[in-house]
Length: 120
Image (cartoon, rainbow, N blue to C red):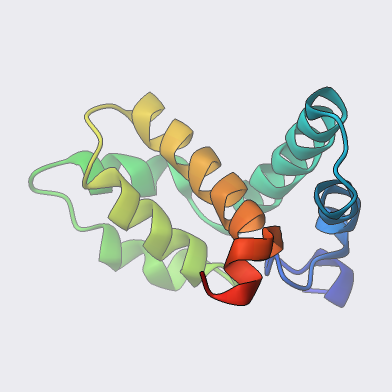
């Protein structure tokens, strides 16, 4: 995967504008628009790298084995593991998708908030 396509939110240039808006105290509207834009791009990239639908189904199924799909999760095993863990607290596929989105946005805000940087 090219460097500009990294899924690591700390290094991904895709999230730079969102980081700048957070640091600059942008309006909630402006920040929301940018976060939604890059969240959509990130999810599209993740969906190309992992069998997201099958992973969610296997994670939700009492008899499922989502870990068996990990070899298919090219360059995105961290995301696959997050989906598996998040699915444990979910009832439906839609719940998992919402949890994944919340996880990504929370990860971004935790990286950029002054409290997260100072360790408070």
